[in-house]
Amino acid sequence: MDIREYIESGILELYVAGVLTEKENNEVSEAIREHLELKSEVEEIETAIVKLTAAVAPKDAQKLYDKIKTKVLNEEPKVIPITRKKTNWAAYTGWAAAVILAVGLFYLYEQKNDIEYELQITDAKNAVLENKIAKTSRDLQKAEELVTLLRAQDITTINLGGQQVAPESYAKVYWKKDNNVVYIDALGLPEPPPGKVYQVWSLTLDPLTPTSIGLLDDFVSDDNKVFELQNPNESQAFGITLEPAGGSETPTMEQLYTLGIVQS
Image (cartoon, rainbow, N blue to C red):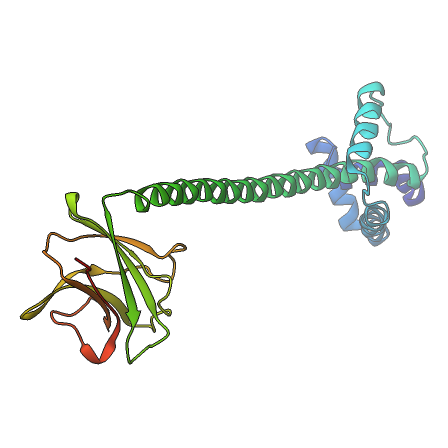
């Protein structure tokens, strides 16, 4: 066997590309085992392909893909006889084009995933924005309803002044007696510490009898600090105390923040 002629025939490049028939592939494998020079040439072909692929890694994968696709579709298939002489560079380039095409397709796939991910982020941001707009709209509607309600003629307003534990505190009670509802405007109360909650009491004065009408839950997260509670009692006064989370059966007088008497 003329080793140089065998190498220049291009058969080794086709072997590396994996496009030979099974018989031809076995013949080349046998020749490689018998001739170290052929084995060395195969290794050089593989190394050249790797270097070429790295050197021309696609910066514009779509353009490269279109170019290779056009070339592949327009070219007539060629049969390369083993005895035909050709330069190794041409074989390297043909095989590298296939490798680059695979790299380009993978690049496009990754770009597609990145775009889809960005779209998902945009959709999530839009959903958050829509929720904020909807919440703002609901809050505005609620505020308008409260203003209308609190200006009604059948509403009794009770001012609650700050007590010894918090003299700067204040609150207001709007009592709609015909449907046994009170609205507590607690904007003048400080934020309760962790593990504590404000509790509202309906009071009769003679004898002094406190009755809990509810807790000001979610005080921190409530923006307008207006709370609606049921009050079926014949109240003569209202007070607000700071209690352990969950409330207490009787008010903790040392933690009485505000108190106000219903005017006759």
